[in-house]
Image 1: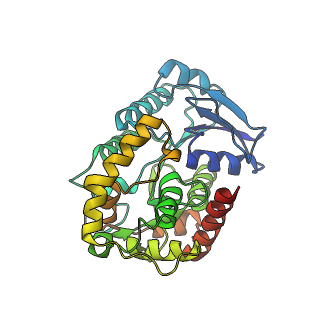
Image 2: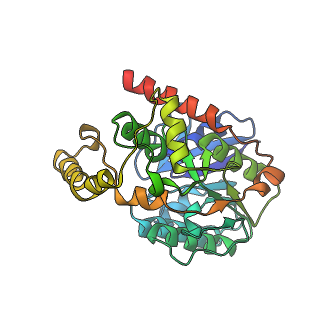
Image 3: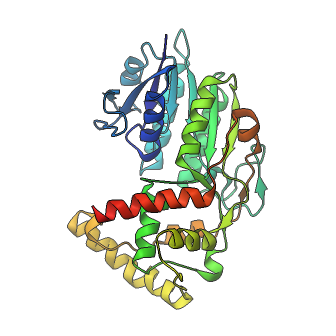
Length: 321
């Protein structure tokens, strides 16, 4: 009999892809859960439920008859994300038949440490609120016998709101390009399909109480990522963004565009801006080592150029529609 798998955060970019992949399997029945009604274009007939993942009572009801849980809740407020993770692990620990839990963490747990990091590397000492919430989630998972933790890097691919859509809009608008020294940080990319494969293999294989980094080998710098993505989008040569231009973006244009988006209540109607958090990420230098995901989960990483070509076709096709 197929195993029922509850996907928390199913309405998000990664959650939708996981649900679609589970729906195509012959061993699982996906139950897509979100705070708002969930619609999965690639799996329109999938079972859905609406719940607040931080509510233990609602969560306990949703877990009835569930054999496994995928936690990919992503919230704008890190405290809300941490609350949902606490509720999950506190609830499953009380069940007579505790389900396996695949918990999605993040590269952010390493902070900005300038070195190679494998799964045994310590958490960063300079964590932002998002990274701190992810660390709390991992600590909770470490105390649960049937948990697998996945740490994706920069997740790109069709429908990625930040690392594919936003970046493409900035590149097409000639607002982003070669950032010089500001873009020499390490871009630990992983395609969304590789993340979904890692989730499915973590559910199928006996790998409980394990942690896996998820990032393709031989990571590029952010400047190289922007250059390759721009070429896939048909933009060549790439814009050289000077320090003066970056300063104007951060101090003048960016705040104006953000205010305009708040007034119009729709960021889609306002040109994108380069925000300080993006430049901060582009300067980080940890290099993720993800050999275990290949050796234990059998991942065969999506080649970067293939992934970018696919992503560019999605973006250009959507823009032309």
